[in-house]
Image (cartoon, rainbow over the protein chains, first blue to last red):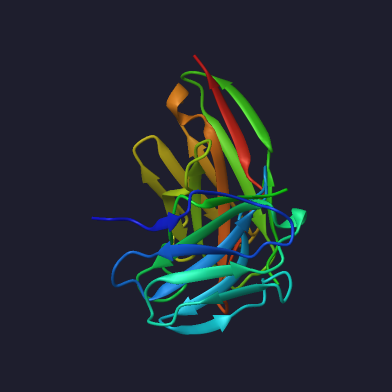
Length: 114
Length: 112
């Protein structure tokens, strides 16, 4: 079946621009995570949804980062007024039930801020 | 919170040799330990996982061992092949948290 998909795969933004990154989880998966992965590092947690509820956003680095999942399926990560330090790969993952189940990752969006 | 240390950061082996990657964790309540393989420019993919109620799990050439007392777990790859070359990440899920903590990754290079 279809896995987790993300779009766009690559995004180049000028500093100060707003960007929106989309994640389509596996159908029926309750939990959805966003991670930030810097070059040569492991994924760092950003935020977690269970259905449409954002249960944890403690990993969001600043109030410029905002995530939503209004209907409990597709999720969007928005970054306002992008900065160079926001350049990274943004990974989305979903799991069937609780966040403690196996997570399936999307291919990521590589964001480059010039 | 949980802290996961992963070693080595780089591992170079000859084809056919074994490779071992080790991770330690700090939270004794952690109870789920997945390992992911990430090829260059690709998504992390789960290759094996272990829960705290078992000490070892094998899947063909890959095995994971868990020592709860010492709070460490290891990935073992036998008869390595060039296609095993990738970055491998360990992670720990605390029993009280749904947020996994990842290690910093090990770049495995298998020379033909």
